[in-house]
Length: 591
Image (tube, rainbow, N blue to C red; front, side, top):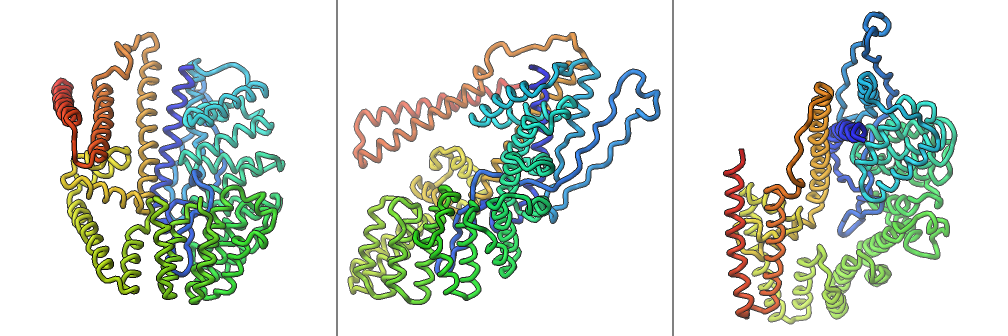
């Protein structure tokens, strides 16, 4: 068990160190990392998320390295068995995408070293044992314990004893889950290296699932061309639905390279049996609209938006993402009609967006804009009132406020319009000034971002300024798509760095055990959670929750704080002072 845990730290460190480089190469992506980011036409030119989420980037195929020769007594005396010099690893080219390196050589060398020390596992591998291993691995993946599953899989797949079973159904399942899990963990290169092993040989479920994962990772990647190159040899023998998936990936890649005609040719090859038929048809409509072919674009949008025009198979294979794309297609139809001053048609298309859709606020706001331009001020007022009644926070709140005032101006309700605009300025200008002040203070920005990432109250993060304004700036930052992409990549890198630190620690422990096998290693006197730092961290979290509850109680009381609430505030101040003193004492006691 101890050897397996050490292997876990080593493999995660190797895999995630390569993932860090892969992510660093992807920073130039103009579309972000969301596979579904596609531009909407005409009015707002927003980006819609229509593809699968939660997949990771992967890399380019490479031959599996030959395991290095074992180091043992008498081996060095034979010239043929002398250890060969390890070839220098080529640095990844940012323009070509991350390399497909499974790090098999390193893991085989590790297991060889363990074998020479008589510390390697000796139990034979059988198909039944692989089945038993897969049960535990799938349970770990379902529970979100991906790192543990990866470590267990590498320990099995990179063992020499596994080679005899790699073409069995159980062996191919192990290879698939390892490649898929690495890709979702951000280890892009190793993921491709393993998944491409399944593209040779028989066409079975693991062949099809490997294609599916490679397409998903290609859509998330900034270098989809490397995935297309890997999939090109097997595209002809893939099932129809997966041929459509590959064609969609090809269309997306060409659209990113600003080759609209070539992209359209690829997108037209996506059949209704593909899970990306709706996305492909919607993207083709966007391209036609950008080329000025509004009628062609409208016809393509109608295929997705109109249930009567949608192929029945598209609903069956499209899954839940199909209906999100349908809402985007209806918004696109409304925008195309709006651009052509067909205001009644645009209102009808916006009306088709269902009440439970995430796109409803967008549809109501744009429909109100159309009614305003059509001089139907009462219709615009009704739509704005309906938008307000939804009670949902949305990115169009400020625009809707201004439009509301403009509707009053058009209806000659000057006092009401003046009041609304004055209220908007009173609300907007302080937030603008606070944002400008924060942008000049790097420490304040860091504290604000940390509060957003942790989910705590930004106003209690130690940032100077009015609490309401700071919370407003934080809310706007959360809506910023660039912040979303950056925070996601930062979280992945931090996860990878933590894996590297853990791997280095385990390697140090292993080195000490191998150097002095009989030496006893001291253990902590108590549980790790009982350390001073852990206790202070829990105290800080609990104080933050108390602050939030007190703040909500004050807002509910509408400024009329009761004696009990004032007593709670005083107690909170005392607790905060004691926590601060405890932090100071801990820092002084630290070696």
